[in-house]
Image (cartoon, rainbow, N blue to C red):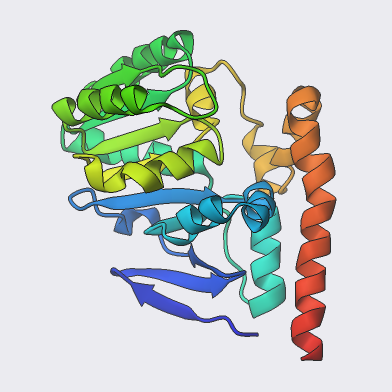
Length: 252
């Protein structure tokens, strides 16, 4: 139904829903070249349908991970191909492992000082060969020119192999898209809530629930105030948009 699997930059993608979605093994991600890695789920898909700047940021990703059961099911519906969900947390874990092997450098941009301190403590224990730096930016909807100049200066003076950006969607993806050519970084990775997961300030659901495709449900139970809009409002809206698109294609 207008979708295809292809090889781009030595890794496999499938074209679906207007995006090139990564369907390969994370081991093919290069650490020695400039790439922007983002994730897409039902919430970000819905927001991007109304936000052209966000849509462009996702569409221009070098790697776009299918981080949501809704996206996995939509790909199956439109293409007949079964793909696996690849969470931002999985990509983060993989990249840290690779950096530790090569005594690499990473930078964490986003979240609170408390969260970043906890990440630093865990990194020192689990990945002692990694050199890391951290910055908690001002909490505001959009950074001003001075904010961005300072952030770019701090990151570029460190020259990390990987930059992890955790400022929630769509702010983080838009920021990475806007400044990717000004960053002296190889991999720019927008991973949002993974900062809190890794720090332990928010507990990720157990693997049992993840394997069942119910990670979203457990997160909703644990954080109803924060997650209700994402799942209870945008969940049904995503289903509506996907089915509408599907029947439009079938009837054309």
